[in-house]
Length: 104
Picture 1 (cartoon, rainbow, N blue to C red):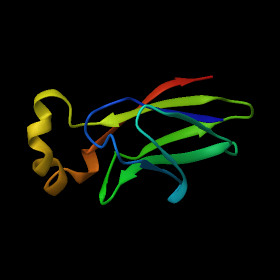
Picture 2 (cartoon, rainbow, N blue to C red):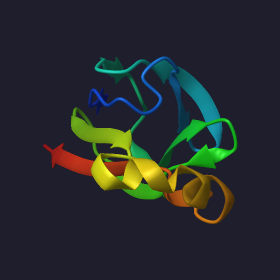
Picture 3 (cartoon, rainbow, N blue to C red):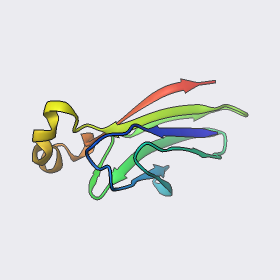
Picture 4 (cartoon, rainbow, N blue to C red):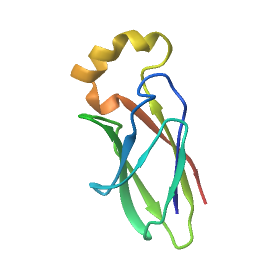
């Protein structure tokens, strides 16, 4: 089981992030939403996308009956809100922060 929580942030608040697992779109997640996805055991690569911007790709392994949780949010928070064009043009692969929360 894959669980993703998207923190509530001002940036991108009206747009959904795309959830990409192993290079394939498996769903979307709205601002402040938590979604769960059934995934097969094995090695996987997770990435969040919005337009041409994305998060770094995270590799992880799921064993039988494992539950793994991630948290995502826009990198444009606080003073970084003024750096939107820098992230869009120079750091599109860091536009979304994606972190592993727990694995059991």
